[in-house]
Amino acid sequence: MSSEKLTELPVRYAVRAMANGELSRADYADAFLQNAARHDSSLGSFLERDPERTVSALEKVPAGPLSGLTVAVKDNIETLGFRTTCGSRMLENYRPMRNATVIDRLLAAGAVVAGKTNLDEFAMGSSNENSAFGPCRNPWDLERVPGGSSGGSAAAVAARMAPVALGSDTGGSVRQPAALCGIVGIKPTWGRVSRSGLVAFASSLDQVGVFGKRVDDAALVLEVIAGHDPLDATSAHVAVGPYGGSSKVENLEGVTIGVIAEAVQMLEGEVKENFERSLATLRNGGAEVREVSIPMLPYSIATYYIIANAEASANLARYDGVRYGHRSDRPGTLEELYTRSRTEGFGPEVKRRIMLGTFALSSGYYDAYYGRAQRVRERIRRDVDAALAKVDALISPTTPEPAFRIGEKIDDPLSMYLNDVMTASANLSGHPAIAIPSGFTEGGLPLSLQITGPAFGEAKLFEIGGWFERATDAIRRPPLLS
Image (tube, rainbow, N blue to C red; front, side, top):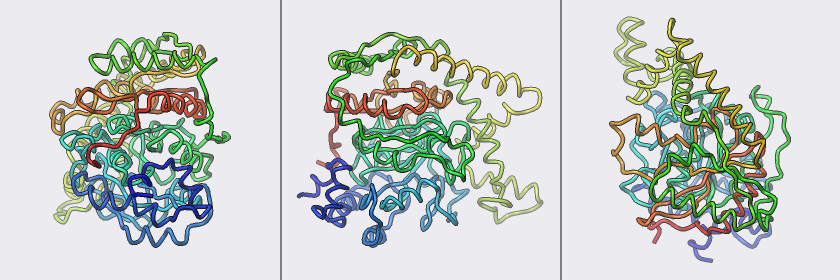
C-alpha cells in the first residue's frame, strides 16, 4: 500500500491491521514521518520532533487500543523527553519531570508521541501568529493562518504528518483551527478529561481536546484519555463511552437539532450558504430541525475575554524569574528582576491579556467587570441548558469566516477575538462541542459545522457528526500534498 493510502486509513482500521500483523507499525508511522520531513519546514507545525526516537519507541509499545499510533501533542501539555515551551521564551528550556495524565494514558494504550506542536504563546490567540518561535501556516494556503491556539496540531493532522493530535481548548482553540484546516476537532465536557499536566491558561475554561481526520479517529482517542483522574480534583466521576457508534448510525430519524437563532443572524456570504446546505443535509437524513434561542450568546465574547484574561493574569503571576520561568541576566534590584524577567519572557499578546486581566481583578473594578462577567456566564449556561432541554444537539457554523491571511488581523485584536464568537459559549457553559468539515469556499478553503451537546453527551455528538461526515464527504487532502 502506498504512503498516500496509508495516511488516509481510518485510525481504528489501521490499529486493528497492525494488531493482526496485516500492517507494519514502522510502515504506517513512516508514511506520516515522510510528510513531516517534506512539509514541516514550510508549515511550522512542530516545535520539536525526533523521528528516530519515534520509530524506536514503536518497537516496544504495549498492546492496547492505540498500539502503533503516533500522536502529535500541543506544546502546553507536559511530555517527558520533550521540552514544554508553551510557545514562549518564558519556558523556552523547560523540560518537565513527569507526563501529563493524558500522555500517560496514550502511552499505556500503545501510542507514541511523535513531537510537540506549535501554538500561540500560552494558548492565547486565534491565529497561531503569537508563538515566540514563529507562526504556523495553513496546509490549504501557506499565506493563511491555521487558526489558534492549537494551530500546530491541526496543521499536523491536516497535512498528514500525524494521524491524530492533542490540543487544548479555552475559547475554541481546538474547534477553530480544526475548522480552518478542514479536519475534526472535539472539545469534551469540562471535567471529562484530566487537566493534570496541562499548563494553565484560564483554569475554569481549559480542556484538553482531540484532532482527527475523521469523527471516529477523534472518538477512539477521546475514549482512551477521558475519565476521572485522582491528580485532578475537577475531573468528573462519570462513565466514559463507548464512543464507537459514530459509524453505525444509518439515518437521523428521531433526532432533533436546534439552530441557534442568534448565531444565524451573524452569518454572511459563503459561510451562510454552506450552513444552509448543512441544514438541508440534516433534514434529508431525517433530523427534525428547529430554531432555538440563546439570548445571551451575543455577550459570550465579552464575557469570555474578561474571565479568561482575569484567570490568565492570576495563573501567569508565578512566572517571575524566581519561582518559575525565564530569569533576566540583568537582575538589579528584586523588583527590577521581576520586571525584566517578565518583560523579556512574555510576548505582546500575553502582556496585553495580563494587563486587561489584572485591571478586571483590581480593587474597585472587580465586581463591575469580573463579578458581572461571572453572572452573565451563569445566564449563558442556563440558556444553553434550556435550549438543549428541547433538542438533542445545537448547531452553528464553527467560525464566522474561513481562514484569513497571515498578518491580516494582527493589529486589530477585536476583529481577531471575534473569530471565537461561535465557540466561546461552550467553554463558558462547560458543554461538549465538535467541529466537522462541511464543505469548501469557491476558493477551496475549508468550512465547518459545530455541534454542541448536553454535558457528558459526547457519544451523541459522535453519532450525529459521524452521519453528517458520511453524508457530506468533505474530507480531502490539502493541495500541499498534491
